[in-house]
View 1 (cartoon, rainbow, N blue to C red):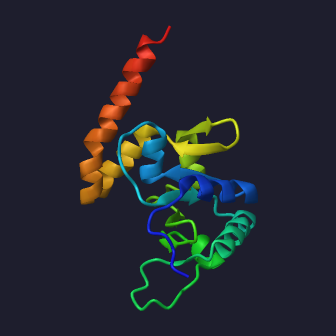
View 2: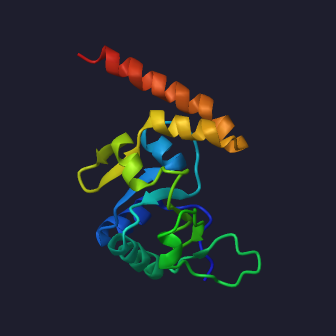
Length: 170
């Protein structure tokens, strides 16, 4: 089965939430959810690394026919619980588009460490945790990747705009 190359974040989030997976949205989708005018093709999450939570995440990944995205030999490699309990990042293709579960963003930056730096967002139906914009900016500034350097001015401007709007609110 050929997987889509652009994520359907709403559908992916609905699947994760329906299964009870504990996660924080990070990366481009976190920026978009906080009104940053950027584009992203995948959904990046940092999941809680407990055996119970990883089992729930694995249920979703099996249902979504998840395979390792950058397998140049196209062997259809599947993620494992051991991978999800580790320290790395797993780039997956799913039937709902790219999903990247990150065990940690960086050393010592897993779910529990990032939790105090999140915002809870709800649209009435779904409630999600999103990495806050100041922390997202800090993390992207440290990576040094070209795509992050390009996004930084937009993220900083978005944060400043949010602060100005907040200051003007009664």
